[in-house]
Amino acid sequence: MIAVTGATGNVGRPLVRALAEAGEQVTAVSRKAAEVPTGVRSQQADLTEPESLRPALRGASALFLLTPPDVMARGGIGAVMDVVREAGVRRVVLLSSQGVGTSRHPSDLEDAVRRSGLDWTMLRPGAFDSNALQWADAIRTRRTVEAPFGDVALPAVDPADIAAVAAVALRERGHEGGVYTLTGPEPVSPRRQAAAIGDALGEPVRFVELTRAEARDRMLGYMPEPVVEATLDVLGVPSADEQRVSPDVERLLGRPPRTFADWAARSVAAFK
Ligand SMILES: NC(=O)c1ccc[n+]([C@@H]2O[C@H](COP(=O)([O-])OP(=O)(O)OC[C@H]3O[C@@H](n4cnc5c(N)ncnc54)[C@H](OP(=O)(O)O)[C@@H]3O)[C@@H](O)[C@H]2O)c1
Image (tube, rainbow, N blue to C red):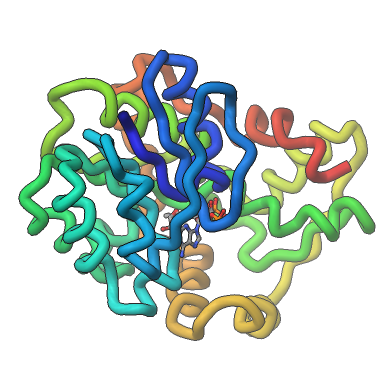
């Protein structure tokens, strides 16, 4: 059995579906009761309360582990990994971040998984295409995107591609010790992302560029200050590594990563 944390999220939802379609037994783990495909077991647990994971991990041989910010704020995932090991899980695929490789983020999550003694695979995605969902209200109501650094392009990745890679690493042998950087097929700027959403809607979407200070004030409403500054640095002055397209999605899936336009077309209902 494969247990998937963050099962209601941008990566977890398509991952649960892909594993179930491949005939795997799956337990979808989330804090609230979740709608799951037929045949999938749904189990409520909170990663900030590691003991709550025990029923979800009963019978699991592999685990997709997501690490929401509140888990880090409560002291990391050391206690989670203790429960995972005691449950008999043998393989962990961690949803980490490209920022660990580019030294933007601390490595303590990955360190805890490496120290666990289990087989592990690290997925290090850059920015997600689905981050554009933060524009959904403004696009629905005003057909406008307000964002900083309108012409700075990053190769954002489709969360469905992260899920597809996770499914491979969870199901197939040979990915033990793998560290995969996951990006989209090309760097795309926020201005072009707004235009792609407009194309999907069949109506133009206006782009209004915010200053860094304006963006910072807005982000402080929902993110801690160090995370805001680190995010603005990536969005505004990315390193060459952060702008580079990684070969890993294509290498692992045998097809190129999906484009932002593809994600926008599949997600258009959120912007209508
Ligand atoms: N977005 C990016 O650009 C980006 C880039 C690199 C890495 N990442 C990594 O990817 C992860 C997912 O990113 P996202 O922004 O797309 O988030 P998301 O899809 O909104 O996923 C959040 C998921 O985490 C679950 N969750 C939150 N707190 C939890 C807790 N305490 N215990 C158990 N489950 C919890 C939520 O499920 P319930 O609410 O149903 O419990 C939800 O399914 C991030 O945490 C980050 O580590 C994101």
